[in-house]
Image (cartoon, rainbow, N blue to C red; front, side, top):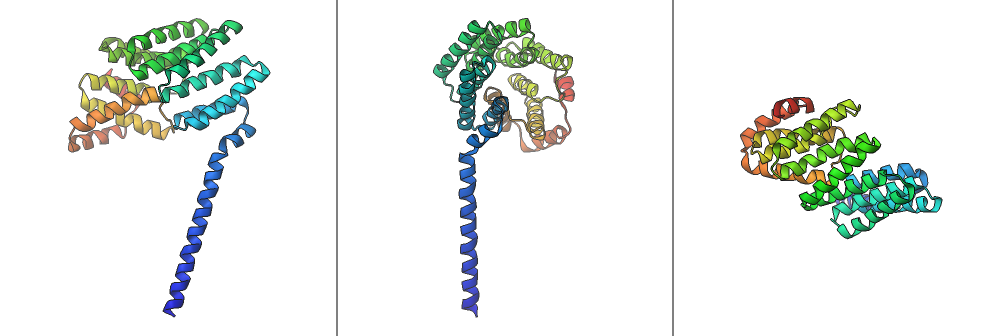
Amino acid sequence: MKKFNALLLLIGILTLNSCNSSSEKKGITIHENNTSKISKELSPKEMLNEAYQLFKEGNDKASVELANKVLAIGKSTNNDTLIGKALTSLCRNSQRSMDTTRLAELSAGLEKLANQSGNHQWLMYRAHMNAEMWRLIGDMERAEKFYNESLEISFEIGAMGMYTIDHFNKSFVSIEKGNFYDAKLLIKKYYNLREENGFKEDDPYGLIALAYLLEQQENYEGAFEVTTTTRRLFKEQNVFPEPPDEKPLIMVENKVEKVLDKDLKEEILKIANSSTVAILLNKYL
């Protein structure tokens, strides 16, 4: 009887393993075919949105594949909007590997498109993507030059979304160069512009710049409160920060982890659990 029960147990385990293995293989197949399925079901605009989401989640391979499909559609239909947005999407992907050669090729494509169409939007995206790349690499002089170019064009053409976000982006350059006064002004203006233009409240992105500012000013307790709140808000809003923005956030987190003791961090965590963007801006700016 014992042998029979043992045999039944063994058969059950083997069956379970077989099912798990089959399920895993099925999951892999679905994952590998995912971009093909997406491209058939979604419009080019929706494909670009999905490419951006995949990029934020770190899946550059799938993101690039979708962007290239949209680029091909744009070229075959002479659709400048699809071409420009696909090139911009691919510029963003080049950031992860800091591939400046690829960025230069894509930038040339955006510049050519702008000259052919007369649409300066593509020059704005070119400037913005170059600024992001050079900030990520650490060349702040070059990054600032491109941010200024992007801000000038976005203001001229009324692209208030880009105009707003580049105030946040440029604040990192000011912090890196030790110009804390200008950094504060840029962070404040970023949130003021968001309010003026009806963008959603409680945006955690600007808090990354605030955390970096506080860390550079050696206010480690404040930096820890802000980084902890930022991560909580990202999680609650299902937001994935982009590489140039997450890099300083990680750096601040690593720094405060070393300098603050466990008990103090526990106290700050209790405060951060209920902190909001408005509270932190009033407290530290």
